[in-house]
Image 1 (cartoon, rainbow, N blue to C red):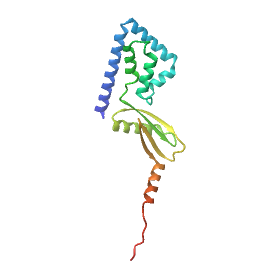
Image 2: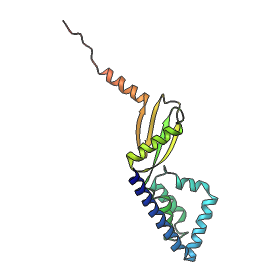
Image 3: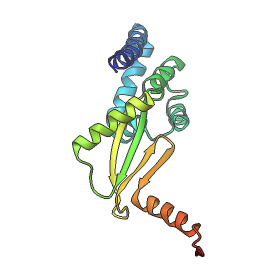
Amino acid sequence: MANLVNKKSRISLEKNLSLIGSILELNKDDAAKNDLELIKELLIDEPELSEILTDPFVKEDKKNKLIDNIFKGNVSDKIIDLIKKIFVRNDDVTPVVAITAVPMDKNAQDRLVDILQHKLNKNIAFFNEVDKNIIGGVLLKVGDKLLDGTFQTQLNSIEKTLKNVSLYEKEV
């Protein structure tokens, strides 16, 4: 596990250093410097935009279209590429929503995140939602997949199995 964490940390560090290098290179150009300042002000003035761009559940293609619609023609293509590197290309983060009948305690959340990170070999953006319609168990949304471990689903499965069982009398 330590190897996995170190590898992830190294990749993350390399991405961050690459971004920093790109920003420093662009910062030498006055036009790019002005573009970066414009973007900074926009993100501060429009917190909803920042929320959308950082939301792991917003699909990459939608983020790309949004960035293009807002910035194309207003800032250089180099700046647009940099924005996309920062906000869109986070391949190592997988959003996970655990839907439960009651809020999960911190220890259960931490254990689930550890298990999922190990199984998926990705960093997890974890959220817990409460749905009173769930009897018990957990419904997991992992990226665009659904894993149903709720009691209701298990009961439905048992019911289906029992309906297919035929009873017969054995003559002695």
